[in-house]
Length: 235
Image 1 (cartoon, rainbow, N blue to C red):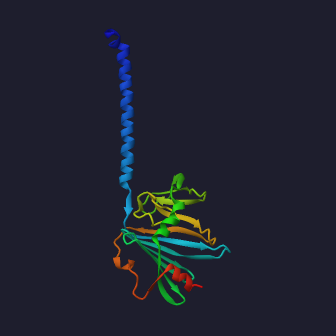
Image 2 (cartoon, helix red, strand yellow; image 1 turned 90 degrees about the horizontal axis):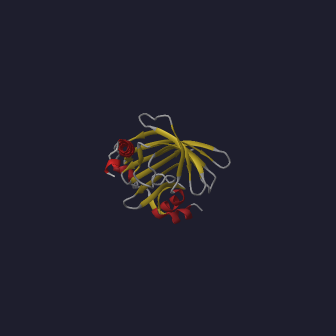
């Protein structure tokens, strides 16, 4: 038995197996290293401004253009929608205080309308666990590496999205249709099933920079009301 184990053919086989094992180990280590480096390269977008150019197409094919600006500072989010017809809406969300306000002009009076954060997360439920497929490299945006792909939701709804993996939202509520995304959406579109409106968003600028805390405060000339009270005003 001793002679068989130490015979040249057996020693050659052992050497071959050992080399194969080492190659697989090295390959596995390299794969894990690359995955780790890619993960470390991603950064949460914790402070700065993201500006989108938008188009809104109504169910009767009327078109409006404008901008949609996301200003972020840690757990605070400000969304500023400005349309070509003069309409403007501000949304202020504070993840720590668990507050959500939309600032509107209702019949000439400025109101800060309080919504329930629970409703925000409830609306996001149908967009969770979305699937990305057909990923391909896109045109770089300044220094950002971009990708384009198809997105599909568990409801069956589908769409197109382009994004960068260099950044990702630091709060799940930043993008209603991309909760817990590990990328930053750059362009996408979606349809509002309630009114048939389709919104197209195309990023103009991504600026990681300091922003003032004051812009997340409700101006003193706004009257604070509940969402239910605002519905009564619109009747």
